Length: 307
Image (cartoon, rainbow, N blue to C red):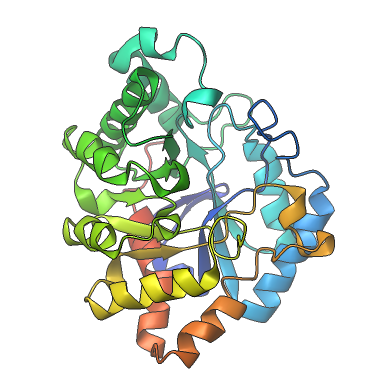
């Protein structure tokens, strides 16, 4: 089952493409970028509806967790209006967005809080998260607070059957995140290490995939961070190494400037332009189905939540 904003949906009922890491309700202006917000809902609805029509978009995974301005009600409203499913998330982002006392609260307390939200729904909405993410760290080694957040996410995932998607800032720290999460007893196949398309290290990608975890190429189109030429090279190398079943793809639209109407590449970029480049490079349709649907649904699949 995929735990969507409208309730559990069988994975086989989601027949179209999946965006594995996006934002529909986000406000990161408390951090270093005062423009990092998504405003007009209608613009999001229009773009997602276009992606549904043009690229058979069926599901969006919305990874705005605690401290990121996430809003499950808005996410559900936008997804319904666009005619797609949505999954919401819980957990904590990286240090700059943590409560000041997060490290002091400790792993047990934070775990209990996450488990409660997963089982009872987000406060004020009753919408149950379908994934833990994007659980963050922002350097080669996590801070004390980030360590608490990662360990609590792993424990909450073990307790509830959900999976964990991470934020490895600028591609850094992914192997350490994987080690911390698996130390809680969480199987690697229920972990996705984020922003690995920003890390020009195919050896790291192969090691993460070889351990059984997912390698997220989830900032496709963000040329100011990395060119799609590099992303394409790294992804093709990972596919050639036999790890096509351990890749998640997305755009990570996280501010108004990334929308098409504002000159950005938008939600459809990874599904359209980038997919065309993969096909031109010789990627066959069975592999494309893994990259654009099957992997994400396998990652998200969880037992039906308790009533």
